[in-house]
Image (cartoon, rainbow, N blue to C red; front, side):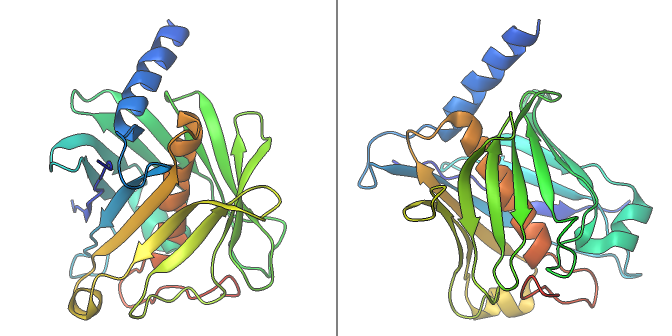
Length: 253
């Protein structure tokens, strides 16, 4: 049975080795699946909800992570001040803390303030994944390309591990938007991050987005956490909208 994890996102107003071992056990429990029809891969599902107060102010995102039975596994919250959220919009730097049901922080995502347009190749997007907090396990770095959204997944030593390539036009219209996870030579596909089409009514009249992340079952658990971080980065870069502003449709914007 495949693992299914939900990440509802609400905008609400208003002993090192021991730690690493505990974190690894928790993360393995989240990412490991039993044999199924898709014996070569497992995956996650990410669902995001957005709301803005009537005066148009953006608020912190909060996430609830659930398993396939609907049981909450983790809770995540963005930690960004009001000025940064509303001045920088979807490009804002952020810290996202992922906690277990006991309130212990197990993963932290750190995104610095960077550009994302192909017009500024020297300061493109990246995100750092820490697990446990304070211990980097990998990075997702945007690569310059005139048309395509491209990223590199790196390990804790900044060594390249995998590549991510998205479509030229990032537009969810009656079909999924797929970001393919590939080998370093970009010859073979090893996984996928998808913004899933959820139907016309939901897409047109709600602020709900659904994402899927698939990867090989034997992929290192640290790289699975990094791919999860990549999904958050892609969501903010291309599918986050603030007030009357529209989602981006490509790297040239």
